[in-house]
Image 1 (tube, rainbow, N blue to C red):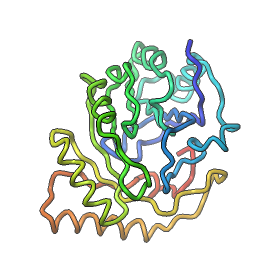
Image 2: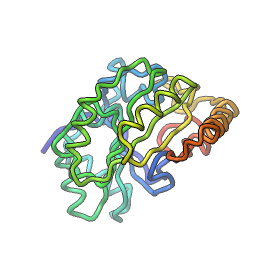
Image 3: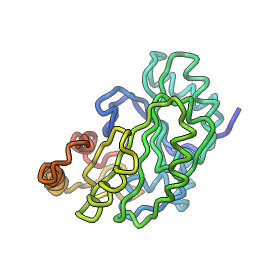
Image 4: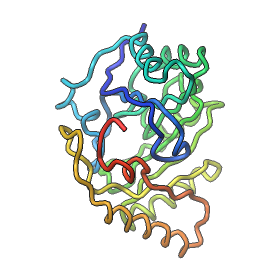
Length: 239
């Protein structure tokens, strides 16, 4: 069986963002990422400085934990990170789907894998200018191709006007993909914090600005959603 680097496994809770917002979910958060976004809200699962907190686990042990948390009742399993695409998740997905579980994954679209077509949903979240990263659109399209029959959606985090205009241009590249915009969390928790303060009013102001901005442009394609888990629990981990 494959060995996975796991930062945390938690749930059941609800999916806090994007197309599956509100859906009961168990999260498998992989350790490691090929990006270093300036505003990353999960550095504990990204930065190699925190790899001592990642646990090497065989697929069967990861799956045993998922089954334990779900009470062996099938639900959606979300593969997150970091960038889960850099890890060998095929065996976990095949094992879970054989037992009736569903799988969703979010990735920035920088690494394509041949097991993407096993997913029930692939959330592609290219990073805007505020992240400090640059999207390789050829690789992004490889991820779309690898997904095959899996349902794919586009999710973009927006912090400011530059991000907003970038999001419009990015969405225009893929007009058939359902589009979700999300106001950025400008007060991400430090990696060592299990709980941390949050500028809730600042996040809500950005949400209101984003709603008004799209309405002003008559840009009616996107779903505009907050991070529900942040509204409910702030920057707490494991919820």
